[in-house]
Image 1 (cartoon, rainbow, N blue to C red):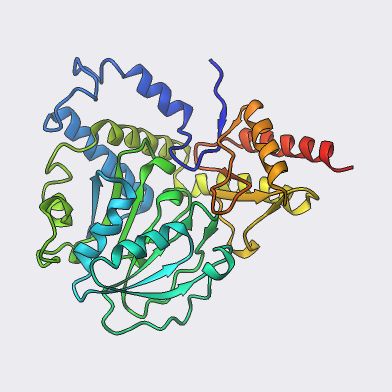
Image 2: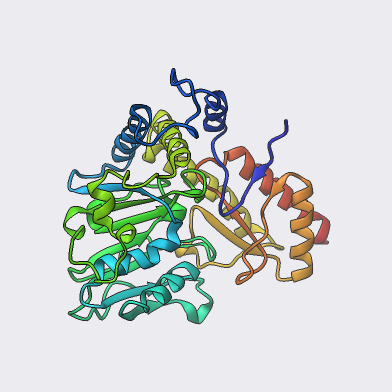
Length: 361
């Protein structure tokens, strides 16, 4: 078997150790006599899996007791609707638009009320983070929404906005568990796990208890209420059991490495390796302002569409898979998620240097 280096933005690379454990337990989990894929979500075995996953996530993120952890279905896009259904009580919310995902979230929220665009970097194709220190915050806002790491454009909000007392909501899908976060600065955090935590099909919501309420928007379906899932420990209906199990294995893997602080140092080293090369290259260059660069998603171009396509094809043949950039940015994008080893980034940089040497006289 030959494993490639998978730079996909999601679904994305998982740790080899996690996959091997899942493989060894595929036919039988523990002494249950069955696979996790087969067991009842009401069984003691699965309840133990769920409880341990939540416990370990709380440890990794230092989640306070007054926050609920919900393992839900539907991915991040469902949260674009679920958040306003549950939180937009005054039918007014503020959105900071720094890329495709915050733009989509704002568009969905407009179905439910007034969306105030508090700041945007659309003027330069989302290649930077706008100033967020003194935003014009209307009094009636129910919350302020950000996508903290924009997967498509490769930007990260490194200093949280001044929400002037309003609840901060953040999509952390593509930076989940990649660096330390102070959960107490947010009212709600969520992430589709397929980018950095597990397989597609699970979204994790971390929500402060005072935001879990009965008086949601009147047309909100039962399944779209946070209270439904909080009251039932994420077991109101059949959850994505196997996906949660894999997430739990990833949490154990991270704890074994030393937790979020340890993986953050590794992620910084990986990103530095690639960014340092990009900054010295005569052929390749990044598309994001340096101060706003993401540790997780690194878009870059040559300046020629034909050369970009040639590079993508050559990289694919060399075992550097899913390096093609999003259509809105073009070029290439390397996603350096937690499970991407340093060796993978080093091989990418070496390959880029060889390609540059062959194309720059």
